[in-house]
Length: 230
Image (cartoon, rainbow, N blue to C red; front, top):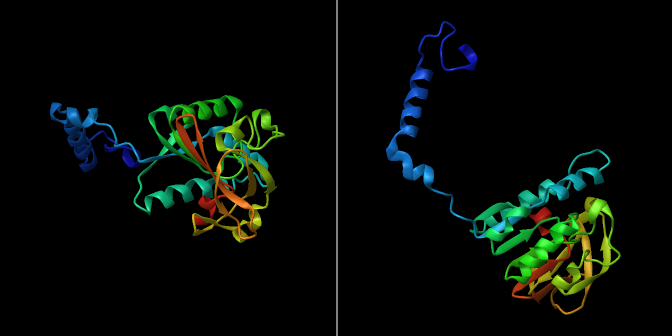
């Protein structure tokens, strides 16, 4: 009532209550049935959302502010949208509905989630992941082999060097098939274990690896271009 409702303090009708009534009648009319049965058009790419990744990013920062997780997520979304590709946010439990996923800032997730991603790629999915996928695994433990939790097989590469210095990440640049790309966040360089090199950092270290795994494909990018785009 009053300032917080559609009716006057004495229960009398107001223009707001009239509008609410009209909207309710329209929404419940049988003619709107097809509208409520409709589903959104699925995006061309799914941006992977993993709760554990966001939580761990929060724990990593001394001031308890998430960074660069928000920049990575929104940077990836903007990059696709502003280049004419419709992105969706896709929870890790819902990846079966998609055949193309982008994983920004994939620094931490569980071994169970890693197995799900591995099986999804093996069954035909295409995964593009930024630097340090699953660097921290179950309970935040760092894997002795990187990419962690068996994902080195999926990406066809292993870590050569890694730098966790997101505060000066704007110095990172690499090429991908000859195109100049700005990096950000972290830097992870690789050595091939079955994949194909697709790009290098400005100092010559390997920055991008493409690989075929099962029926699917992967592309591993050794920095966070999503952060740079943001």
